[in-house]
Length: 315
Image (cartoon, rainbow, N blue to C red; front, side, top):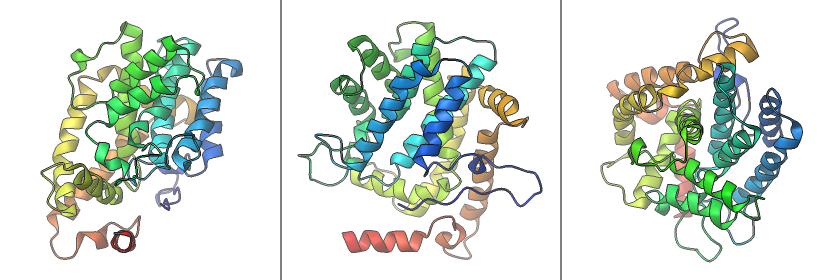
């Protein structure tokens, strides 16, 4: 699926989040992960992340043995790379804030980010529908993938189990207290990944447009409560209220980490993720409140009518 190009705000000197990194340029994303990692650790320690990154590209492209290419438009490679860069940025902010993490903990956290939605990928023998049918079980499937393919990703059994537990922390349907993290440090890493999963996708400048893709994924998964694409827009406002509460309470350890990163690395005393999300929600409120025209005409960062036409042609 074509992605919108990064842009800068029309306001002079106001840099928006999307201007910093084009997640459609895989080499640039890997370079950014490497750059952030190198602020704290050696390049030798980054090798497992680089290897996992290249294998993740193969997995989503359909060239990883035993699996089909990604068949979901919302939970796709672009999303995975957004979450991975958000994870690296929060991890950097974590250490800039005076807290510590070992090189292997950092590497496992980034590998977990790369694999956190692997549960949407279908096995080669699974030819029915798309990976969206696994929406309800995708977190468990992703955690299982890390264990099953540990050898291919160069993970020892102990590291694979750790990566698997970190992935489980992205499950919004579970209480944080119910996750079996091994220690405080692992819980902190899981908090970073869980927050990055939220910030990465909701900070996407085309997040509102991509909700149409999410609507189709929910329909295939049989998730009730979304009778139309417009309804998912309406309910996203309530979803954000709950997500904001989770970020500010359950995942409160991650508060300020993005600000620390952007301040130190870019000289911007701003949390670009929170700013981007707030802009999205402010605009979404106006879209939902305005019934003078089709909502698709107000969401212009992707050609939604073309996307839906392609879907009907494939059906």
